[in-house]
Length: 195
Image 1: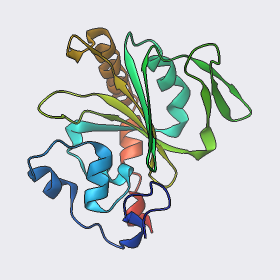
Image 2: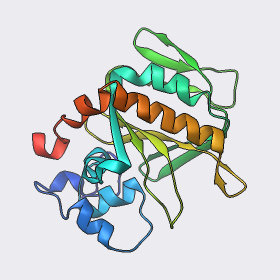
Image 3: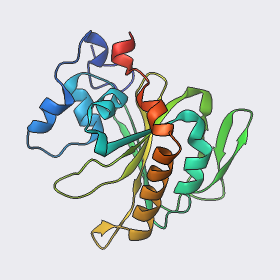
């Protein structure tokens, strides 16, 4: 039976992960976080926790508005959400929004619209996971069960990461580390260990 969240993996059937993230990374193939999670039989957040420390910095869900505001300053970004067999991608400038009764609403005047219920957000991760030998930088947003809700990637220009957006990503990542947010979030027990 497939996972009720993503429709593909069988992560809910495993009391223990199928393999460790470090073992999976030894296989020389182009990894994305969702593929690592499926291969290891765990949630995307657990897979992110399993990555080497230099690849991931966690921040609490309470930092969402500040982080989102930083993302809106990037010159080029790509928003990606995959649920079940559906994937949605938006490239361009990410709009700001506003909080109304615990729901963050994205601007409806742009092609990008929608909302996030902040009570469903579990954690945020600044992720640098190389893909096919190239640098990638993304901010991953996980729900309370550890599944990926969506991600915002630093956009590309002329085949490489946009320098202004990349600088913005690493500035926010450093700020999360300096504020001690990463230490607090990293001490959160991965979902698979908490059950």
